[in-house]
Length: 522
Image (cartoon, rainbow, N blue to C red; front, side, top):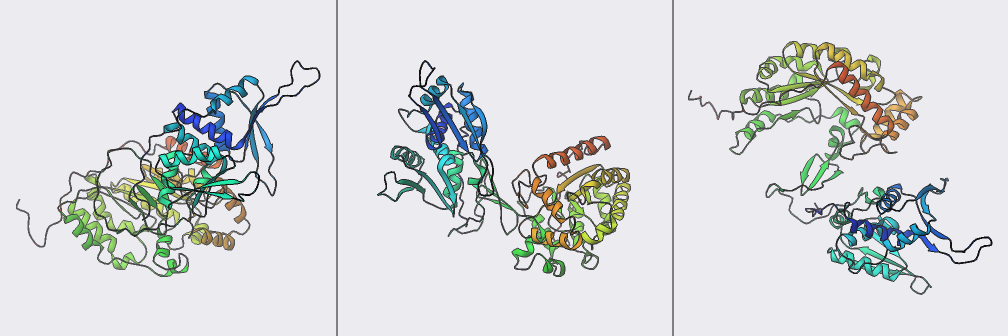
């Protein structure tokens, strides 16, 4: 919806031309460079040479410093402006060497032909220096008409539709603003084509997806190339379409997608797909179906209390067992023991792995945090019984809540290993938009004295926010505390012997379900 397939541009960062273009756009756009000629007593000449680049965004400053160093130009870094309640902290790089200032001047000279990688770098540098992306519009400003002309030529050379707006044209130095026309599709193409460094300017949060295209799946085909994909958070489920990964965090937001509240409605209104087994059988019967491992329990627990009556999960397992189809299953409820008679024979054929979520070992906390799930020690007993039946079983320490449950990590792993678990994983607490206010309210009710500290630690592990959905870090977080947690988990797993190599689940045994009452020939 609105994205289309984003063209794949080769990464330009190893290109000398790209680096020259980037430095030209950034330094001409936002630096202080010059030689000042005046006499100074006691000096043989009075020509100070100065270069200074001051920025509030460290990504652009570090990229500039690195590029200059690669061209043999060293710079010193210093604090240009300390942080105040009204202003962001600014860092700067500088040099007063006449040779270095002269070399910088040569680096940012206009090339004979401003195209290709040089043009890509120039646009990126100008965007980092004087560009913005706000209210769904990309703008780049400058008072120098030559800079504006080179910029618009470069953008048009890559097929971008632009317009130039002049603010206060009757002033001595009017500001010219280059605006990129088009919606989110063009914005993503801009970031892919030029690769500016400042991440806060590349945030597409709250941008509208607009399209008149049909949303049916028409065809699926391999790309036959490597391509950067973009990870976004939506109010729907998980899907991959048109070169875009769309990710959403699970059960409570799914209720919001259905028009219900992720709070009270999630606690009181359940949706059951009573014909799940029949639909699964129909899918597995399709002539084009090819088996891959199915994950059960990824969105919500397959053994909620109502499963005792509905037996939907068991009916699904019966179909998978009949077809010898591999699957994994994760739960925090002891009801899984009911289905050991189905799981154990599948395990003997390398067709199943089970995971049990054990968040902590505090029964009082469990009653507040997971009131309808099995108690922590009962879950360890589930691991023991599954392992005793020959079912490969793992433990998920999830979610890890800093200052509330993280202190239990090593003990949970030790107790689970003693019970027979051989696999282990963990997930840092995730607070997408629908969940964050609910968790904060829960903290205020149950742990008012700890609430502020818990959220402070979460922010330290989520880039200063409640949640960071960035692919690759959403499960683990970033920063020193997140790295420490990862090291603790890794060292404990190494010491206890978790996650040793084992063959993948077997997909070769799959056979489609029987049609009606027809018997096998042999």
